[in-house]
Image (cartoon, rainbow, N blue to C red; front, side, top):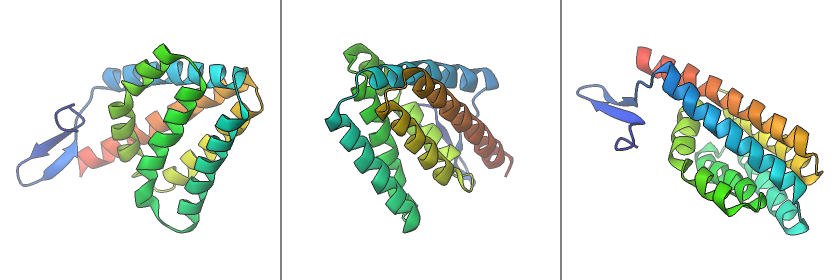
Length: 166
């Protein structure tokens, strides 16, 4: 993550979140919002039973982790649910663009989920998005995905500010 510029190592302080400018953070999240919103819209339009079952399984795993206090396993499932959504769009080029942003997603999620309660909120947001996608409501799925990305950006900014001030 240091080579990608997400974190930096400071002498006698350790690894801290890189200091992105407000404009850089907003640019990255704006791109994620547009592309993930499009993926959700397309996924809702192209939903099939196999994908619906995969969504259900991953969401159930995430809920189980919450209930059992095993949050250390969330990052893997978080990326898995995003990848499932991207694949469900059935748009190879969109999938490749979004997978190319995986390092940003991983870094932002790790930092943003340091905010107490963010994992729980993120799981609920994912659950609702996937339910909407499963129901084929493309417009609502896109809108909910954009709200989720906005909430993620707020959590990231809050956690980054806290980490860099301490």
